[in-house]
Length: 197
Image (cartoon, rainbow, N blue to C red):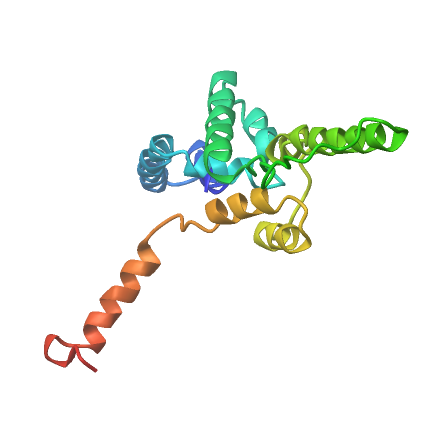
């Protein structure tokens, strides 16, 4: 949503700046810019647009820096996405199902080797690289269809939790106009007296 609004704003600003356009056209476009700015300011009220920007591989924080967002805005967006990631999506540390009460013999080199292997296995899972941090650390790259990209990530098992988060946020409609239109058409199709059809 944010890149689209920025593109529209830049195009409309060019029309206003072009003195060869009729003054009435330039004035109308200026009013359009005011309306666009009103809706753009509403993106500050919700973190969803910022999350969608960060979870789109083409944009990430590079877009924010290119548009010269203040560092405090970028850090706030990153802080918010990290909070939601940790609270709702990050894989939970797996606790062993049960601990054995039997003791293994202390004599012999095999015991020490098994204990070492078990310790390494626990360390490897607890020190696993955070999917979100690894994704954010990568450079942005062009992706034509971010939903297809994240569906592929989820299906392949690479970063499935992050893929689910991205799909959850990238599939949120930017507007409810289509939904409202569908309900309005429904009222024309099904009258109050024919509701059980």
